[in-house]
Length: 78
Ligand code: SF4
Image (cartoon, rainbow, N blue to C red; front, top):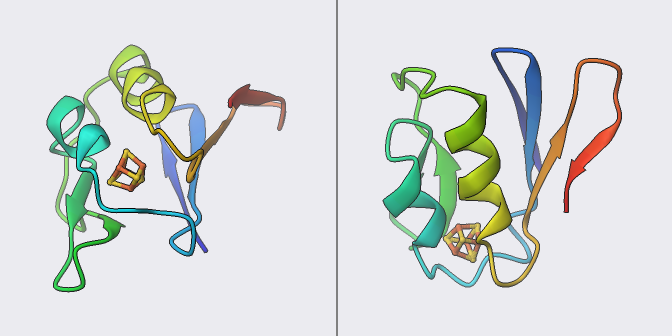
């Protein structure tokens, strides 16, 4: 599990669930990448692509490995 603050959003990756489909990487390549194990990870150098893209990228995950919380900790994805 790893968590990162992106703008006003907090994004959490549950790597145990990831199947490496790459959907999130296609939509938000500055936020996510597939690592050497073929599983999702945060890019360390990535720019914030904006909240809409971050939410889109997390919503397309077929196995709900990505979670997004808003400013007040409210759940936005899934
Ligand atoms: S969309 Fe989900 S399953 Fe696919 S790489 Fe991203 S986190 Fe993993």
